[in-house]
Length: 67
Image (cartoon, rainbow, N blue to C red; front, side, top):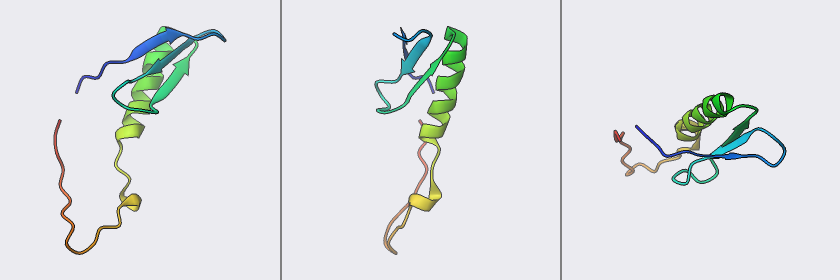
């Protein structure tokens, strides 16, 4: 999966990265390389399913979809 990441210089130094397609998925780093590594980890955590959050009713269907 490919996602567009916006990387901007931070006012405090370093860089900030975010994804317009994933609201709230933001990370930062001291270098561009560190920022890219950090935002990859943030994306993985953002997209990781949290089974504990699911409380389906008996007639609920749960399925996986590849993108």
